[in-house]
Each structure stands twice: as C-alpha cells, then as structure tokens.
Length: 510
Image (cartoon, rainbow, N blue to C red; front, side, top):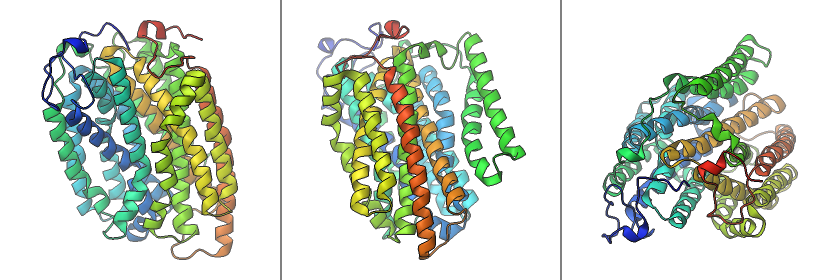
C-alpha cells in the first residue's frame, strides 16, 4: 500500500478505546479484536451479497417447476444478478471513492434488504429475473466498499492483510455455502424464503456499519469529478458482453441479435478505452494496468470465477436432475468445496512463503486445471470421485483467489482502494457470468434446451454425463491457461504482506 496516506495515524499514536467503538476520524483500530463490531458488520454485508450469488442455484429445479422456464430462463435467474452486479461494480467503487464509502454501503444495504422483500409479489420467472437484476445493482454498492473499508479500519499493514484475508474467507465461504444453506431451507420452507432472509441480515449489517465504521474524511476521498460517460460505457461493455454469450444459444450464434450485441460490446469497449485515456478524471485509470500485479491478478480472477460458477451450475443439475437428489442432499454434496475453501489457508500461505506470489499462483492454476480435468472423469463415476475433484480444484482456486485479491487491492493508491476492490470483484463477476453462460450454453447444445422434470431416462442421463465431460475438459484447458497467464505477470514476492507501492506498481518488477 501507499505510504503517503493522510487518513490514518500510526498504531502507536492511536489511543485505547472500548472494543468495537468507532475510532475518531483520522485514527484507526489497533487490533482485530478491538474492531470486532465493524469487522463483523462488514463481513456480514460481504457474506450476504456473496451468498446471494449462489443461494438460488440449489433452488433452480424447484423454481423451474413452480414458475416454469427452460434452461436459458433458469440461467438468467443467477445470471441477471451477476450481470448487473459485475456491470456496476466499477461505477459503485468510483462513486464510493468520491462521496463516501460508508454512505454508499448503507444505501446498498437498505436497497438490498427492501428489494428482497419484493419476492412475495413474484409470480413469474421474468419478474424473478428482474428482481434479481435489481438485487445485483444493490450488491454492487456493497462488495467493493466492504473490502475497501477493511483497509480503512487499520493503519498497520499486517492488520490490514489479516483483515482482508478474513474477508476473503468469509466471501468465498458465502459463495460456496449458498447451495448448502439453500438446500437446508428448501427442505422446510418455500423457495421464496431464500430471498426473504436477506432483509434482517441487511438490517443487522447496516446497524453494525453505522455504529462501528467511522465516516470518511475529506482527505480520504478523491475529489475528481465523476466520470459519467466512462460509467455508462463500462456498464454497456460488461452487460453486452455477458448477454452475447446467452444470446448465442437462445437465438443462434449467427443471428442478427447475437451479432449485433457482440458488435455493441466491442464498440463499447473501444469507446470506454478511448474515453478513459482522454478523460481528465477517468473512472478507471488505465495506466494502472501497466502493473503486472493489477493486470495479472485481474486476468487470473476471471479464470477462477469461470471455474467456480461453471462447476457450481453444472453440479447442481447433476445432483438434482441426473441423480435425483433432494435440494438438501445436493447442498450437502458441496461440503468438500466449503471445507477446503476454509481450511486451505495454510496450504496457500506455505506456497507463497516457499515459492513467492508468481510461482504459488501458477501452482494454484495448475491445481485448478487438474481438478477440473479430474471432474471430467469423475462425473461418470460416483460421488467420492466428484468430491476428490472438488478438493483438488478448490485448493487451486483458494490459492489463486487469495493471492490475486490481496495483491490487487494492495497495489492501489490509498484514495482509490474502493476502485481496486471493485476491479477485483468486477473480474470475478465477469468470470461468474461467463462461467454460468458457458455451462448453460453447453448443456443446451450438447444435452437439451428444456430440462424435463421428474426422473430422467437413462438415455438422457448418459447424454448429460457426456456433455459434462466435454464442458469440464474445455473448462480445464481454458481456465488453466487464463489463470496461468495471469499468474506469470505477478511479482516474485515471498511474503503475503509485501505488495508493490503504487509508485513502483507502474513498472512491473520481475
């Protein structure tokens, strides 16, 4: 992190205070224990928006039978959230860095909780998709700010790293816990309750943020004008690019709509780059990508999220449709993902200290590809084989995600930490959209566009397994290359607390 921060004092100059009491502006907490209220609130806010990424995935068969819809429609129940979430993250981070991170987070929590209550009025799949899109917008005002505020709570660099690591574990656990929690709730309650629980959680998190997180100081915010044209172009680029993937299978890859959307995404990207290079106060300073840390971490994060979303979406259909398991059984089947995500921390730390960021991340990318390759073999075997593939994949996933997230946020200037966190989250959400769209597309092309209810015939099950083998093989190759290329551009640091300062980040250290 930059050493020229004007928003905090050194830990030694910070007076003692009651545990959990908000520090005065310009001062920070001296330990994780003293900051338990704001940390818990920020973790809860991050957890609820991450768990909402996958919470409904376990209920897709139930929702499909209740509201009707084909593979593409069910894909959009999860894709709409990721699409608006990913499309607005950069904009939300830019707004927060200008108008106050705590203020924007509280607005996001309020909208998230209130919109979740609207599920009681949903009567069609299109209404649910629209609601999920709005929830994604609210979540975009939460994710990058929670990570950014963690850095603001502490002046000590080691405390910052420990806190951001805690946030990473909570966020990733929320992502994989979604199906387990959803399956457990579906065993006793209607699927609408999967969204209704967001309201009280958002309220508790908002109260913790209000009483535990200090308001931003003027010195800690950037006073550049908001780049509205850049914001609009970034939303168009990400949104059109993700929609093009789904449009291909729904309307045909050479249809006028698909070709038009693809052309629109390319044009929007070109205009966004042109705008950001010429703007006096760009929303995203493209010179940051001269840093191998920023560039490589962003690329690798896209790969990890493609893998995670693709596996989660495919296995939910595998367990519930092909094997006929209940939602709760399917949720419990994800336990290897959850447990490995939580307990792989020592492996990740050992790899970093032993080999450095670049090699450790490359090893993680190889493990990720190996896990996906094993999954291609395991889908025709049994659950034990799938569980082994989950563990191998998740160790690699955990390693790549942790290294890249901490390095990326740490490489940003002090007054743009929200933008750094937003860039990290944007890469992950773009990957999530691509992964979900890819699996939905492959299943529709290789298996069937309409998933029949009830017990599948043996012929359809065999076709589904062959389709899974193809898609997991493609994922193993593609994700391995994407994450590996990203890993090769990182620094060779051997310490999880070492990150290039912004001045040095502009010129990548080999």
